[in-house]
Amino acid sequence: MCDHDAKKPLARFFPPEGEAASRTSSSRRQRLWELPANTHCPVIGVCLPLGVLRKLVNKGVRGQALADDYEIHVGAVAECANRNRISNLLQDALDQRYALVLLRFKEARSGEAVMQLWRQAIAQGDVAGAFWAALTHPRSDFLVQDTVLREMHMIQHQAGATTRIDHARYLELQEENAAMAAELAQSQQRHVRTLADKARELEQVQAQLMAARAELVARESKVAFLQADMAELAASVPDLEARTRLKQKLDEAAQRLSARDAQLAQLRQQLAASTRQLDALQAARPADAAVCEEDAAEAIAAAQLVDKTLLCVGGRSASVASYRCMTEEAGARFAHHDGGQEHGADLLDANLAAADLVICQTGCISHNAYWRVKEHCKRTGKQCVFVENPSSTSFSRGLRQIAILAA
Image (cartoon, rainbow, N blue to C red; front, top):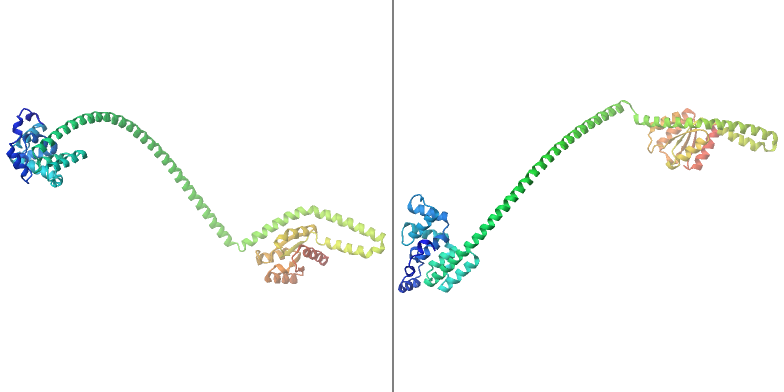
């Protein structure tokens, strides 16, 4: 209730009984200027925000009101006492603003139903529209209006107390917010410094990455140039791969030859000693002359392998080491060709040309390699032994046979 209504007699707020009865029997909603005078202040104060109220008053006076909020409120309440331009604008604004609430209250058929809807609005915490709808409802008598007005008065008191509490809490929150804002500013500064440090680190890493990529590109270009040079060199030298393998084998043979020089000297000494011993045995035991002659023939045949290059064509890959060992124990240099499985025909021709003796294991070579070996040995007159079974025992027999042929 406003101060300007405080000293007015209560009698003027309540019309006579006949007028009250005629109002409750009507089906038309009451207008703002038809409400009791003590309702105008809370209706204007509760149902219309100050900004909306100022716009309506400015529209009503067809200009700009130069009054403060309190004076605007007091003037609007005074204009509600009768029907005029401003009270009509306020009536229309309230009906439009709370049209949905008015539609809901329209279902009420008695004062008790109006009060029930009003209490529901209080429970839900949305009383502005319900306040306007309850006061202007056709079934709202002066008892309903007075009850609604009293309860709205208490709600305003409670709202004021709550507002004071909220204001105190608001001040506390402002202080809290200021502290948090200061802390946030410090955190943002730390964050900015951290971002700057990370940005510098990222720039350094990117620079290192670019340098590494440039170095990689340079190395790849160098490798590409070297590969192109190697390809050009390989194209300019025919059979480079075969010659390379042959050179490797020759180097290995030279190493083995140097390692066998001492063994060759020792074998020669043993041969001389065996010859002397044979001569002594022949002189001492004429009856064993045939046996001694056979042993002497084998010794002489074995001596023919010394310092010779023996080429083994074919044979099992797992037995090549055994072939080599037996050949070198006999004093000869060992060379091997697989007979066309991996080694090419050009390498076979080179090995045949470099060999003094040949053992060809026919069961493990190609037809092309077989005919190449046979044709070469026939054309050059080289001793060649053909062995069918590629075993170490067969190779040993072939080795003795070619030693006898070489003798």
